[in-house]
Amino acid sequence: MSDLSVETTRIPGLLVVRLPVHEDNRGWFKENWQRAKMTALGLPDFGPVQHNVSFNAHRGATRGVHTEPWDKFVSILSGRAFGAWVDMREGESFGQVVHIDLDPSTAVFVPRGVGNSYQALEDGTVYSYLVNDHWRPGQTYPALNLADPTVAIPWPIPLAQAEISEKDQTTPMLGEVEPMKPRKTLIIGALGQLGRALQAEFPHADLVDLPAALGETSEPLVEQRAPASVVETAPQPLDITDPDQVAAWPWGEYGVVLNAAAYTNVDGAETAEGRRIAWAANAGAPATLARLGAEHGFTLVHFSSEYVFDGTVDPHTEDEPLSPLGVYAQTKAAGDVAVATTPRHYLLRTSWVIGEGKNFVRTMAHLAATDVSPSVVDDQVGRLTFTDELARATRHLLDIGADFGTYNLSNGGDPTSFAEIAKAVFALAGRSADEVTPVSTADYFAGKDLAPRPLRSTMDLSKIESTGFVPQDAMVALRDYLARYSAG
Image (tube, rainbow, N blue to C red; front, side):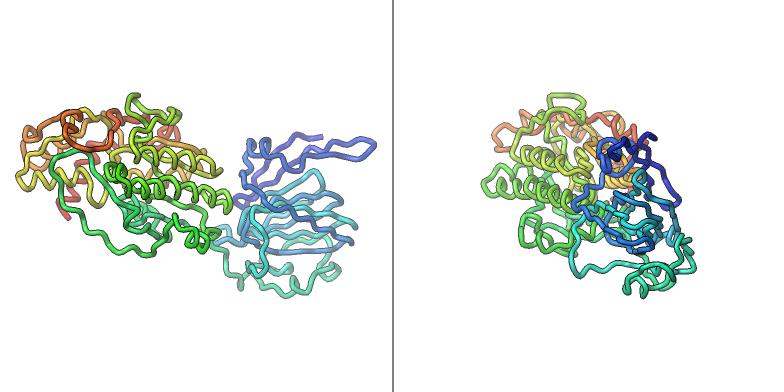
């Protein structure tokens, strides 16, 4: 009896699993699917939802090559079979073939887009397969002729002597097959600061945006503000808080959903209207996406905030207990809890986001250009996060297949206060840094009805750095950003 093992093949993602079979005079027993042991050896945690069994009455029964739009875990429950798989996915491996003999000690993980076929080698062969989506009538998918000479599957029993369905006898040859495209990427909140950066990093993604009322923003505490930037019309609206719109959306077409949408008006969230919107956008919508991710198997990337902490710990780590202060912070924390329930998720906690649109750095640059001398809080300390850096980190985690979970992400370098950042912007604009007057949060709050802010926003970046990602220094990124902003 061999140990459980997982072997790679020349088709990317197609894995052969060797199963221990325990035999005695009564027969045999095996663990046909054992999630914990198999995923520890590299099998994807693909979340099967349906178990199908095919009984093949006679030797020579031959089925396939079928390319259903889901992952499969195939195995033999009784008898023997010859299994063959053809990569039908768009890409360099299109047309690649793998074939092996199957008995109860062998199983195969077949990723979406790889055609599956087999031939029974004994009467009464029972073929089993777990799938991670429900079969539905009317679904279409690529199929390949069993006799295609290009792939030249070496069937042990000649096809002329095999039992083949009429449908499988009329499927096209490889040159006539349209390769299966990969599941798409969806960006929600595509016209926000982060959404625009994600568009640049994921240029072929589908784009949707929340209704304008669900995407208001606010800035750090500063006495003078710049006019809001003009925002283009959203390419396609999708209200994640509307059950009818959610039900009508084709979630099964997506492999990755990037949720960059949020209500970030920290002070507005303290009002009766803002509180309702913030809970819907920041907590309810992520909970809906988490449920959909579990149901459809897509990877959910959700962007959160250091506001989920009260700012008394320095630096913040990924496992720090949540301790939100105001309503906005509470809704973001609730969203974090919801996202963590879906199996395939990356939760990126970030701080002080700067991108294309209304933000603190652009406000300071505008004030520097218009001879305004602002007062800026100097006891809120953290690091800037530029949206292109956040998008780059997102791409990095997805590309390397990093462990799912929570990651802190900001630009690197020494922590600074908002006042220090404002002084740096003024100096880069040719104004004296001394024209920025530091003020404490307590003094700034005096006589104003504002939401509480965390004073310490610096995050520990060691977890994402351990994946090979190196954050760019925030001050270097600031200089580059202002150079682009000035040129524009």
